[in-house]
Image (tube, rainbow, N blue to C red; front, side, top):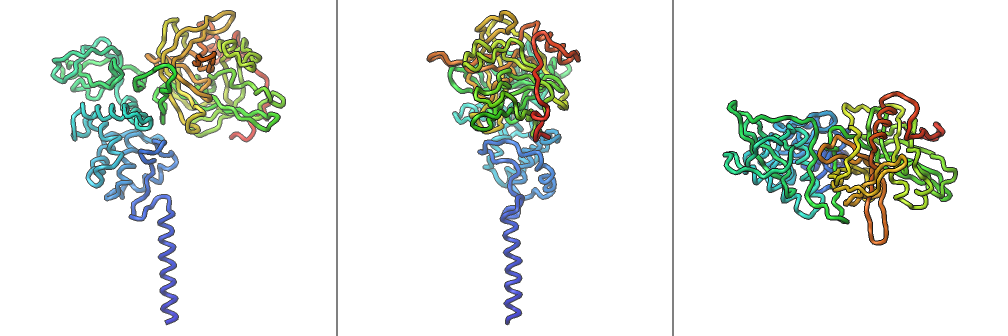
Amino acid sequence: MHKQLLNFFGNFSQLGALMIALIFSPFASAEGCPYEFFPPVADTQLLMPADRLPNLLQFESKTEDCPELLADFAQLYFWGIAGLSPDMQRSAHYLVQLRAIAPVHSVLRLLEPAMVLLGESHRYSLHEALRRYQREINSGQPLRRDKALAVINQLAAVGQRVDVSDQKLFLDPQHTTPAAFNGNRAVVLNAEAGLLFAYGHSGGLELLWAKPLASGKAAFKHVNEYLSFFAAGNDSGLDHRRQQWRMPVQQLHSGIIRSRFMTQRGQRDIHCTATVIASQWLLTAAHCLSPPQDAANGQLSELFFEWQGEKRVVSEIWRHRKHRAAAEGAGEVLAYSGSDLALIKLQVGVNVAEFPQLNSPAATPLQIISYGYPQDKTPGSLWASKCQAKPYLRAENGYGDVYRLNCSNSVGQSGAAILNSAHPQQIFGVLSARVRQGTDDYNVFAAFAPDLVKDVRGLVFGAKDESRYFERLQFNDRHWARNVH
């Protein structure tokens, strides 16, 4: 009897250990299926961490009857993670299996309409697929809106971007109803059928058909730039920022520039947005590198560039010679905004295939986009703003023009590149500051003057050690590189 009790308790303890292992395993659920690797659709995150990819791939042969796995692999091949290229056919394959065993799974709502648009599914019409995304965008819930836009931007990223400025476009595949489309860029969904989608005049998503030639294919002029889709609405004073889980602009790579100063009350950390403009060079705002008024000695105790989960050591800083730090400290924003430009050189360059172009904007109202890391949102999350910019202060004595924006931005977005909405690979300047004058509250950006663009190009690409508009700041290497790997 004693021996039987020992065997019973021994088996019971083994069973208990097994149950505990299953409960607390990071990958296995009580039903034998692993827990989700990707965040749930209702989560503020969209993509799974890249370091979880090897663990997910080991389950690819065990997807039967596991909705968690089917949803994960559908998302994996739709988005592409850690160098794994998107594969829409494989994503559609897993979505079909997911619908068979979990027909109301939330991932279906997110991705299935995309498969209809791509022709990988025929569960409902093309117009119904687009209507479902438009409903999400107009839901009034920012997370639903931004995730729907993320799907649309992914379709634009993997599809063919074309110039349709000289195309005859129609609202139906029979080519009977001409489209009053006022844009010049679209994404090809089906080249043989001449099917495209784009943003219409009202800001809504739109399906368009181009008339095929005698060969059976429509003639498209390809463009090598990514298209970024935003919801309509840029009323002054309202927050129209969109969360981005992946930079949708091919030539743009941005990250966070973090600086630390010792003050009388302890250390103070400041972060801004910086954009890669060459292998070792970043563009940001000059005021992001200025010590706070209560800094102990005015010196940085640490500075680094946070990019794609890595910390990059800074080797040089070049600040606009006309930058007025005293005006900055006094809160006189407009007195320094025209010179609020800085260049940062990294010790080791980043691996980027293409870089943006620096251009001087025209004086007419501009449609612009910026991508930054605001402090009033989830830490480290990327947000986009699209709005109109108008000339506000003219350049004089070496300053750049100051443009006023009609969209809201926050602390942390300072230094973000201001992009030409029509050609997002072109940078017009950097987001400078927020101006409050009585009841007036608006943002401004520092624009590049033509001579300044030439000067920056000479410094960055000409391997010279001097600049007409920028001065190199002195610093102590051992402070700047501390605790940075």
